[in-house]
Length: 375
Image (cartoon, rainbow, N blue to C red; front, top):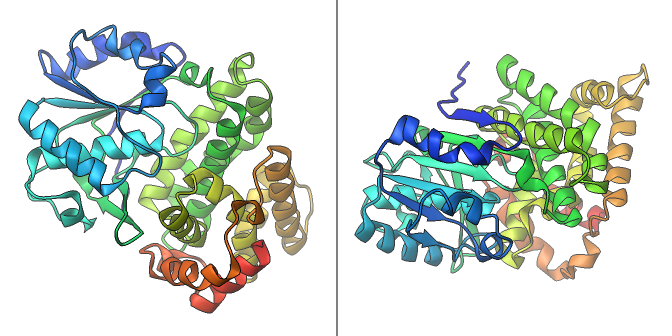
């Protein structure tokens, strides 16, 4: 059994006000480089960090599902600036981009050269990760997911040095998060916890993190969606639930939900959280014959009182479908993807590195069937 979490975590409401103190504690006199996106800057969230570090260079061109060309362009910039610490501020896209850019700062070539596990020769620059959504947990994981636009494929760049050195997790950064993003990123976190708990590589230690994450998310997601600004307890619980899911799935794995979601995201630029939200219950239905006992355990965490495991597992799936609907997650049909595109999605899903971890063996035809049921 292996479990690795080298990231130092600072968690709490208002924690962003301590950013200068946190940086100086471990990186005194370090030169900094901020990676974010234009939405974060326009919302004024970046100012909460920039006000403490006047003159810090900023790369704010990260897009949804960050592209390999964007990362390579930023890599050239960071090699010229030669900072000591990269700060990633934003959702999963910005944090993944920050980790990838930190890798290119210390290694030659392009980001596609490092697809896979541990392909780098020099450790990346240290990263301080500051999440502004409640979903990806990229602040505490060892992977950076970057879309190769020519191959239309989401690359996973991972390795033990890819964990951020520090995660600054402030639930108050969610206050201005629009309800649709609370919904999709919160269900993304739920997907992480469900898959971490049910995939083949799950361990006793990853189960601990997954179970606590599930408890917090089930308790808080609908409340956070309804009043993210006014409900401090829900805001804190959903943010902590998201963060705790990170050590669970990065030391366990994800499964077929992510395989389909990453395929759809790479082909159609669908937001990752939305794709995970759409496919979670349909993959659970596919996995039910082999995962019903685990799903029944999750059902109890969610408050289901059915004694029979099969019934409890089916009730959990029904609950998740209802939750997705109540949070106004779009349907698969609303994405406008045509059925003649399903075979390509299914093939990419099957080729995903996490496919072997799914609790039930899934081939191309199985993914096709999942897509048809979701449609």
